[in-house]
Image (cartoon, rainbow, N blue to C red):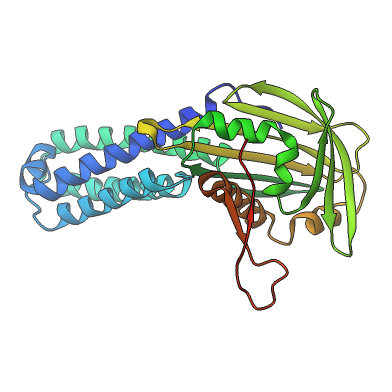
Length: 300
């Protein structure tokens, strides 16, 4: 799995946010000035239809701006673009339509559609979710954490901290350089061990790693840190690729991460968020009654 170019993921997110604000602006125009907008684009006055389209645009924009991972709401914009193009096509063939203005509006919507599709594809490549291949699993998750980027990076760079938030990892022992030894829990009180090395490091932005040749688990990935504007914390994106070098070893991966590995990674990131924001992690492990216990640590 290639390490992302510096700022590549941030650029995807920035483009998505811009589309979110564009949706809100267009939606407000359709909602508040439907008659004037209808005349400008040549479709005539539609005091009911255009406000409804405006509400849809505003909803898409708000969803993009609020989402930790905007991939899904951006895809909803693509669906909305298709609806708009269909409506403009109907207006173009109507007898009372101003075809010149409608053609210009159609070209503008088509251009925005191209941007939406490209953004959606980029987010799909760098965003969240899981992809299963023969003998391999690829995972990607993002989350916003209300802490400074340097604090989050510092915690992650100290690899011995990671078992506190990764439920499947028992221990990590770093050698003081770029290499480390990992021990993960498997069902039946068994363990899986491998050695890894850091392959790319950009302080406060990126940390990438991979397992060493000969490890029982092919493991590589990166974590990307992006400071959010106006002191709103940091966006964390984790992308992993797990490979089973031996036939049948994929079963060990599913035992390691569970039947729904993307859910497990999401839970780990939520534990990280809770720990960094509150200094505590709530857990019900080992408590049949379901009462919460608090596992605390002192942040460095």
